[in-house]
Length: 439
Image (cartoon, rainbow, N blue to C red):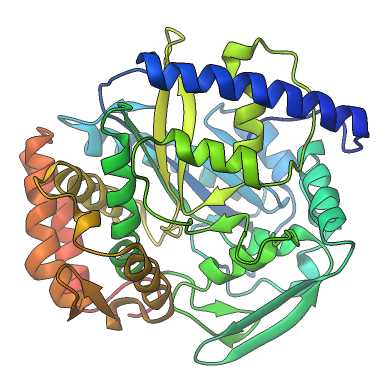
């Protein structure tokens, strides 16, 4: 969804043209998987940080157009709401000083952005949900001035036959309300971790990322409040799932989803499922050659799996696969977010390369249930783990997962000092049962 489009109004011919182009690209993508045309490596890391532009009273400030013009940085771009922006890091080989370099680049961009905001009598905040945001501020009037967002809003409500979105989140308190546009999604901001892997190993890494989603969200939860209600530790998850519910005919076929099962043979299955089962939201025929995968990428961008496979391209034009791990909220600090990334990278590598695939030790249903329980209660959660044992997530992380994360980062030849520093942040945070939602 990062690419801009030309119009928000579509005809049946637009849909037919898009479907035909999507089929051609899917045929080519299938050939790439079968013939080994996708880049085999090296493993590459990157991240995206969504954050809030706020006024001196810490209220959302809908001025990202002026802000972005002043920042003038290709690594900083708009988000759905005029009070949200996104900061990106450059792709980095997942080895050596990658964690330090990621932190340095993100810090440099953040400092430039905060200085720019302060010159506007504003500031930036990183948090999963800004507690001061009001429902009336999440309106089309505050939508970023990009056609793709207006088109997405129109198409979601076309599928819903113009029925309002129903938000119903039951946690420590209950929030129940109706909303008449997708802008309620803008209340949820995240820190998205990217991992480029070769196609031969992608299935193992993807399934490992699914399994790790529960402990990852437990240790990083930073979204307990919405509209004055104390809800889940990571309220961002159910909010986003309900914010773009498209009224799809199949029960459980949500566009924001944990998925329908582990992958067994190839990540192509995810792209095929997207093509076969999800209605096209933005049928804009693209002028690019089939090899650019423009239609696949645009359609894929309207289906928000919590672990989402992506097709991208190296600087030399070689196509590659990435896994986008989307469960981590923004904030509360850059050190915390890089620590979350370090824990994920080390742990996903260890689980993906261990002799017995972890998906053989934990059912998909248990992994999914773990995820939603961890979103509700964070570091107080009990999880089902390998062997169907019930364990407190605190003990699981400190006694089992942290050693595995250290091992994985060592195998990736991550700098030992960086490894100790960032995983030390995780260890101390979990020992104190402290994250952004509980402190």
